[in-house]
Amino acid sequence: MLASAAEFQAGASRAGSRGYFLVGKQVADFGAWGWARMDFAVEVAGKTDVGCVRTNNEDNFGYDTDCGIFVVCDGMGGAAAGEVASQLAVSTVLSYFRQIAAADAYPAFERRFEDCSEHANALGNAILSANRAIYQAGLADIRWSGMGTTIAAVLVRGKSVSIAHVGDSRIYLVRDAALEQLTSDHSLIMERVRRGLMTIEEAAVSAMQNVITRALGAEPDVQPDVSDLEIVPGDTLLLSSDGLVRHVNDDQILEIIQSAPSLQTACDTLIEAAKTGGGSDNITCVLLRFCAQSR
Image (cartoon, helix red, strand yellow):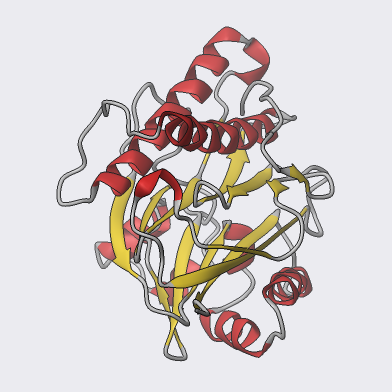
């Protein structure tokens, strides 16, 4: 659901036919802009796949380890519009933080998110910029009218991370051999679950799983959920589109991440598990692992 977006620069390259990411295993300490350096390194890997049913991939992902920003998006809108929407969202968010890095300062924020750090506020405002870009592109070109995308994003700063999302793309934390979902889906079925009108088991088989209640580009304004998280060495974060979690349950996700010899192998295995389970949608995952920094 969107118009064409410029391809990412600054050390990024295309992953197959979808998503932009830095090639190979990346380890960075994110010491940019004069803020406190991490006490740990970060390893990252990502992958996207069209799945077993769709003919085109409307998911996109991207990250920039220099800026500490990581993004997964799941577009919607028919034809190529969903792909355009998700691509534009990723490129807008990455560009937002690249411009901050170049200026060595945060800009004046369009909106303030309460009870959040300055870093989380920056992440929320980057998502507002992406929403505006997608919405305006849809107005400017009839081919992209009505397009939109979900987003899940992580910003790494110092010893903490900020997370934000819109829609049903998710962020999970693996810590102490347990998997915790950090985001709450903006979807019709999860709203019904939260209100006690549907059980989790009923939601898992509902025909309404693809109905979301918030998306980038659908309206002139959007409300992302934004928060901060303290990180400890050994933590792993998973960003994923709903094409993964529709077919791979929490226990499977945890077992795959913990048993894989590398993050890239874990991404490969997660996607293969979703395809084995049906692969009814595009599938995307990005994994971040926080490791003790050798001194």
